[in-house]
Length: 130
Image 1 (tube, rainbow, N blue to C red):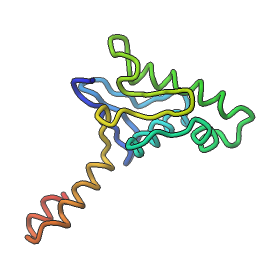
Image 2 (image 1 turned 90 degrees about the vertical axis):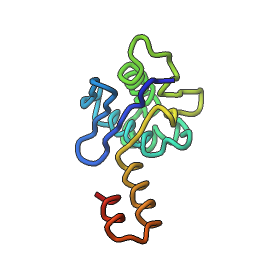
Image 3 (image 1 turned 90 degrees about the horizontal axis):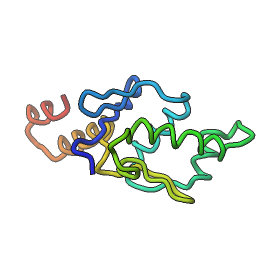
Image 4 (image 1 turned 45 degrees about the horizontal axis):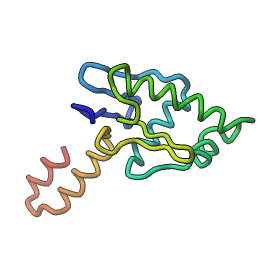
């Protein structure tokens, strides 16, 4: 388990931040989009074929492209000293992110909206939504 989860910003420029380490460039744009998708849907595992077709539908070798993108993400998210599978889980048929290893601004925003919906005090609701 990581001492500190990756903080992935999806609104605005895609970045992943853990402590002072910031990732804002990825092997390809689609590799970055793959990370964004996995982070946004980190509550489940995703089929390799599903991901390959989603991101490389216009390619002759979508699974091959996915196979090249995953090690690139692993090198960035799990640098030397971090055990493989701590952040990125890859199996024969499925891929996903470890839920406790990532946080997103979108999830935080959704949580703030849900919390604000449960509060009746207008000023408190505004504070939560800020």
